[in-house]
Image (cartoon, rainbow, N blue to C red; front, side, top):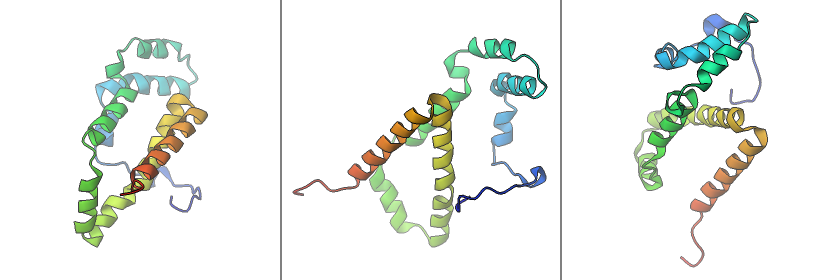
Length: 141
């Protein structure tokens, strides 16, 4: 995936991450699976979308993702990350760095699906500017 080329992979060779199957099979995913099943069989999806619309935000897929991001970054401390960077073995560093590209892509795809390409691009560009500014020492220090 790092070279940007698209390659075909047989379904039998696809593997999911630990916990993914549990999430897909959870009660909260049933409305989404019903929509997908209706779409794939050519059925009217409107009743399934109406059922989904009736759910509170806190029971939605997007809330699960937003909540996971909140818990992942609620105590963000870049100095602690830097300390880890300086103390990780090369093998551990590789385990940490390897998924970063995929997670960044997944995040961008999520934001794009949720709010559209232009708004997603603005958010990602703003985030990159903030990250760059936060790593640049203030003038005069």
